[in-house]
Amino acid sequence: MSIWKKIGRSKPVLTLIGKSIAAYLRLVHHTSKLVNDYDEDYRKASEYFPAIIGLWHGQHFMVPLVRKKDHKASALVSRSGDGEVNAIAAQSLGVEVVRGSGGRARSKTLQKGGVAALKKLVSTLKDNRSVVMTVNVPKGGARECGLGVVTLAKMSGRPIIPAAYASARRKDIEKAWDKASINLPFSRASFVIGEPIYVAADCSDEELEQKRQDVEAALNAVTHKAYNNVGG
Image 1 (cartoon, rainbow, N blue to C red):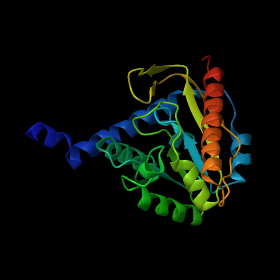
Image 2: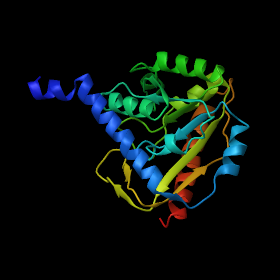
Image 3: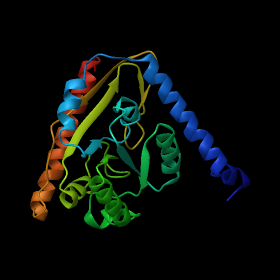
């Protein structure tokens, strides 16, 4: 590894990047106007807390800033290099993090710290804290839900609540695996919350796959609505 790569991956540099991202997201939040009042939807969703808040990766950046201050939540963040920066940014925005990741196949869900992460997330939910997680298959489809989120719902008994944030002014990165959208300041924005999805503790593999598809469809629906609210 070259000296520049070592410097780029050093803790001070990663901390600077993470805190800079958090500062930028605050700027976007404070200069943007929400076009829909989500207070009532949030109140209804809170009846199911603690819950698993499901998001699409690449569309999740602003969600910590629209979270109600009294809503205790922890975020699942991958163990990758990018994950370290994301963890620092999330913590700077007042969100606790759990490190780990998984994929669509069950074997993948149990890799990359997946077992420890799932156990920690179940414990977090039992402690009356919601869990916020992106549900895409890592490095897979931009709108392909993995098994991790439904496995967590099955293990914990807590519902999955799909949510989406969109802004009119943004930079869409089409070449990125998750087709991420970078929200820009001075914009109109929308935050949409969907209906809860439960997964039974005794559901079969076939039923678990159906629930995975249900979460995928629900997330696509709230994402479509959020984008429609700001003009597409």
